[in-house]
Amino acid sequence: MTDTTDYANRLLELLGGSWAAQAIYVAAELNLADLLTDGSRTSEQLASATNTHAPSLRRLLRALTTIGVCEELDDGSFVITPMGSLLGTGPGSLRSWAIWTGAHLWDTWGRLLESVSTGESVRKSITSFEGFDRLEIDAETARVFNEAMAELTRVVADDVANVCDFSDAKQIVDVGGGYGDLLLAILRANPEVSGIIFDLSHAMDGAKRAFDAAGLSSRCEFRSGSFFEHVPPGADAYLLKSVIHDWDDEDAALILRNCSRAMNGKGRLFLIERILPERMSDSPAHRSSARMDLTMLLVHSGRERTEEEFRGLLAATGFDLVRVRPTSGALSVLEARPSG
Image (cartoon, rainbow, N blue to C red; front, side, top):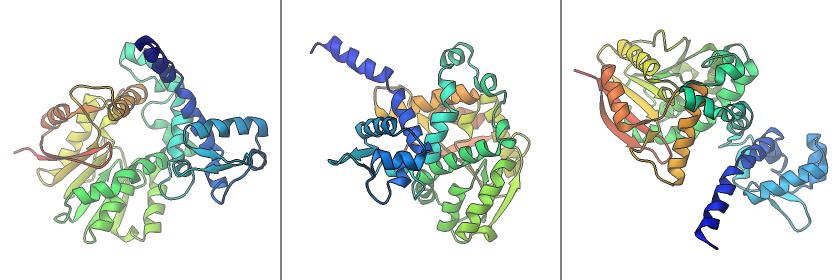
């Protein structure tokens, strides 16, 4: 096979790659992982349980087999794989993220040329809403979004709690904290610390339920508000996980200045974000970062940033970047202190 043929085959595979995301989304929407938790089932049994067309569902299941989500047995029935089980509702679930990706982000990718041409998000032209405004009036969309963000946070929460020393903190504010999974992990690891979840109102009920279930409600306050207007003052540490990448430099700077004002020259700021390499290469890690960077462009006019770009943004808003700690995943912890 010639080099040209190899390149053509890889390019064709990349061009056709969207089918896998949609197949995974449909598997999540139909809750196939939970239906297969107790053992193998035929496509006919699964079709009856999901109210779908059995021959077509079998075709989907066979396609899912080729990407490691399920496995076809000799008798023609199907079982879920360990990776596929993450589309269920058990521990480590990524089901809501699969649904958010396959349903709520799907239309935006068809408008990438528009965002690249203008530098602007296409979300408003698709949904008539900017930023996170839709979540304040659409409870079901808010639920899927917040659960998806919680799933991604759980992947890294314990790691952040382990690599960062919060032993000298009495109170921590999780800015844009959603359902509070990051703060929960930190409070578990630091029994003397209390916290505040600060986010828009659409996240408050879910956060309260999460802390009630964990038995930690007595150590946390729940305050709704916009970080573009203010941030709860006087805490020892401020967390912003996957917040700054949602926004362009102007809006990100406004958020950070509000944090600086709330800190009044004291405490520590922790940004938990992806850090882009100075130069991209053909690697899985860099492809993941590039995908997220383009996602931010499409949905928020936001961006991922290099370490130097974070350093400059922090310096412009009254902070010194004092250390960067990698986690075992894609995110890093950037710790900053007020300048001077």
